[in-house]
Length: 343
Image (tube, rainbow, N blue to C red; front, side, top):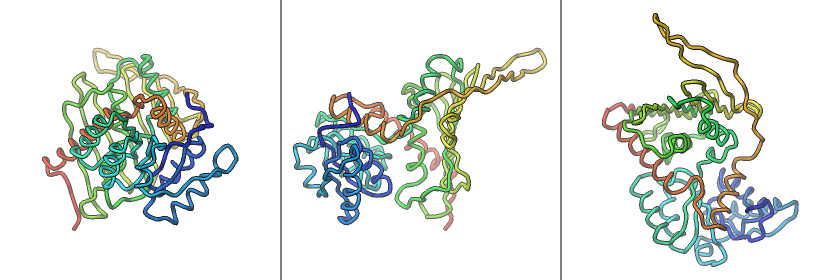
């Protein structure tokens, strides 16, 4: 059982960028962060100094380490990788070969071949891989998943995920690889690992040639459930919404709302008449959720994985599922010649 005061500082962070510094803060707050590695020694030193102040109100030293230092240190049992996506494969393989459990910020890799190589390396080393599918650790999604499993929407029929925002535009991976892994991970959980029988996808590029900015996809499953995804980092308004529709009700997880309104149940069902079907709707009811910090909960799960040597919720099986669907979405786009790119 992991508590917020973790007595063994046995985790190192590789990558102290915009997201890495948040990971550092949470690992340090849990008392688990031993050192930080970054290509910028100055940036690593700055984050190390500020992270060491997060431990139970006291200050403890967080070292600035090289990659070789981390790999050679037998006391470092886990490595969190928050570097740019193109570097994930090489760093992950090295860390696993050195006997470390690893956490990798999404996406795991930029190809299914690289992702499979990481999975094979983990199997050979007898170590676990955890993916940074943050929303899998969000209290609202956990409550939504439990409600679906408990039959609170009846039979599941459709999943709609929208991830639109005026976000940070990347030059190394497209919106497909940057944004869609979150929603595909939630679909993996809701579908209990069932893969779609068909996928159609469109991707549009307006900013950097070869790097798509807008993604829309539809997929269908053998049991009749359908799903759709929208992802876009050019949208003027932030929309982070997961809608799960059943034959008796729908659940909406809206991460832009305050905690008391993040998850809402909408009673709705089809009434069939001789003339035409009708939609019967009831009053929307918010589902109470205890506020928490998803990233801290995710880092707790990472530490639990290390200490118990057991797979986390966002394990390598989920990672490969997401990677397969990313590749299928990309291939669907190429096959249907639906990609538009400005010169």
